Image 1 (cartoon, rainbow, N blue to C red):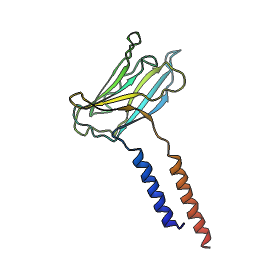
Image 2 (image 1 turned 45 degrees about the vertical axis):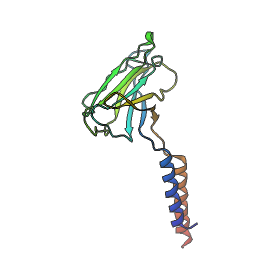
Image 3 (image 1 turned 135 degrees about the horizontal axis):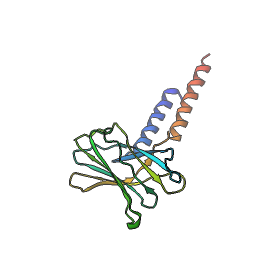
Image 4 (image 1 turned 90 degrees about the horizontal axis):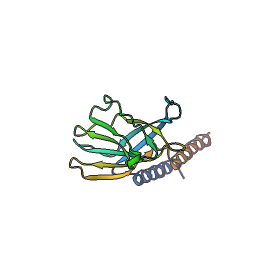
Length: 177
């Protein structure tokens, strides 16, 4: 297989994988284990990134925190996301009510350039994971629902294909000598 044909095949495969992973809205998260302030608590932080959606004025996305796994949600710093009104509602264990991180867009095309963050006490074992979310329009109709996902690592197949491309270039370079 010559280099040009291999490059075209690599491009076609990467487009195919990108098309398979596309959907209406994607909320990814990165977790950070913060230093614990109070003995016996396990302080963590989620940093969310929102993709594949254009928010209009009064659109809301809500991320839910299981009342059995999360406590003490910290309100985000208001100055970070100027196009957003961010608020947290505490989980209520005695009533089995989930906590909520709400983000209300204040403008059409609200900026998604800044990450959304919230810190909390983790009551579970291991590392905190995916959470349910809903997206609402300005009439509070549900537009989309899903689960947050971890920040994706580079796809193994794309890494393998780029390695093969590098080997073919390396081979072609030394075969010309």
